[in-house]
Amino acid sequence: MKDKFISIKEAMNKGKGKVSIRGWVYRERKSNKFIFFVVRDSTNIIQCVIKNENVSKEIWDAADKVLIETSLKVTGTVRKDKRAPTGYELEVDDMEIVSYAEDFPMGKDQSYEFQLDMRHLGLRSRKLTAMMKIRSTVFGAIHEYFRGLGYFEFQSPSIVNSAGEGGSTLFTIDYFGKPVYLTQTWQLYAEAAIFALEKIYTIAPSFRAEKSKTSRHLTEYWHAEVEATWLDFEGLQDLGEGLLKHIVKSVLEKHKEDLEILERDVSKLEPTVKKKFPRMTYDDVLKLLKEKKGMDIKWGKDLRTIEEDKLSELFDTPVIVTRYPKEVKAFYMKEDPENKKVVLGYDAIGPEGYGELIGASEREVDIEELKRKLKAEGEDPEKYKFYLDTRRYGSVPHSGFGMGVERVISWICGLDNIKDAIPFPRTMTRTNP
Ligand code: 4AD
Ligand code: MG
Picture 1 (tube, rainbow, N blue to C red):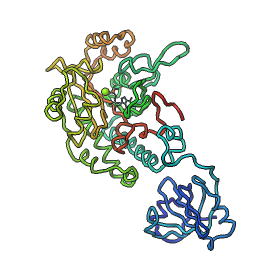
Picture 2 (picture 1 turned 180 degrees about the horizontal axis):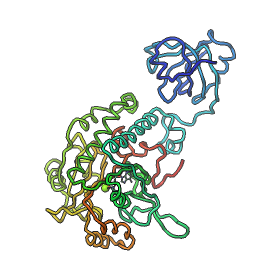
Picture 3 (picture 1 turned 45 degrees about the vertical axis):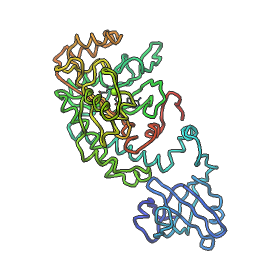
Picture 4 (picture 1 turned 180 degrees about the vertical axis):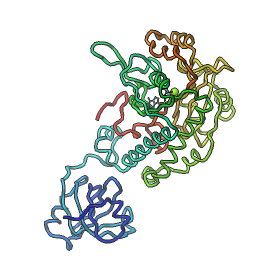
């Protein structure tokens, strides 16, 4: 077999004539006269047919032993065929087995936990492959967006000495006999680096010891974060909205087929690209939920999953909720100068019940206020010495946010569980494979 190999996608684009492809058997069906394989590679799947009368006994016998996931190379004639799963069929005249497969353990009707145990093999499924392609575009789009706006990519450490987002979800690790933590956010380091670079972003893993099992929480997730000097609260909202729009637009442009494989209704994503996101205060949300959903939420309570979900039912784009009560938000968020009870922070809540996609705020610059808030949370300001130093040498107004990349992928792909938005999910009960 000395032909040049092309991808399945290229073979289908060619549409007729001789082609050689290579890949893995996705499905197989055998009779006395015909053997049908659906072969997949990273680009698509194609039905191949081997006719007993057309090939040598050697090839026929080899094909007869093929099971799902056998890797092989085939040469034959491709033509349009409406009955074939992707509209083309390849009639094989030569075939070479690269490696036979054992009985493939995955199939339909298996429990979700079993599928997760077998994730190393499950990645080959069409749905997870489609998700991973979209995921790649999402990461690319984040880089494009920030770099396009003149942001530098900046890296912070993963091993840290203090909490960025509160002690209750910190992972402690044994660091040569001393307890240190896995980072929850780059933020404290980013606030040091903006005094050099001014506009920075990152995409990196963040770690949260989430003790709850939900369809939205991972213990290790990818966090796209941004921090900038002189960025005001309005600008911070524009930046978050612009990022989500750019990501969704990029995926819609490049992944029509993948979204189809995921059975995603793309009309649900289009408004995000076209419409301005509603922006409302926490107070407005309480009124709206009372009026439209009959929900009584006591002022001062954080919005929980149930409230976020009900709110998301009222809109077809993400909603930017601003000015939460300061008690429910992190110590570094700046108080609203016009209302000391709330902070200049926002959450962008995804549509269709996908929850908080972005958490954002203007940062408190007053060092005494920061110390006071840290103490109120039971933290020792001594541990935050390096962070507090950033306020001592020419502090300036600045803002930033963090976006949960898997939350966004879940929403775009229409997934039921965030575990399917990452190849190898980590949760309270899962670190394997
Ligand atoms: O709202 P969070 O906790 O904000 C911060 O960490 C800020 N320091 C970010 C910043 O301003 N630089 O987290 C940000 C986002 C959330 O909006 C959510 O999308 C995601 O991170 N997130 C999670 N995603 C998956 N699993 C978890 N356990 C997550 N926790 C937060
Ligand atoms: Mg948050």
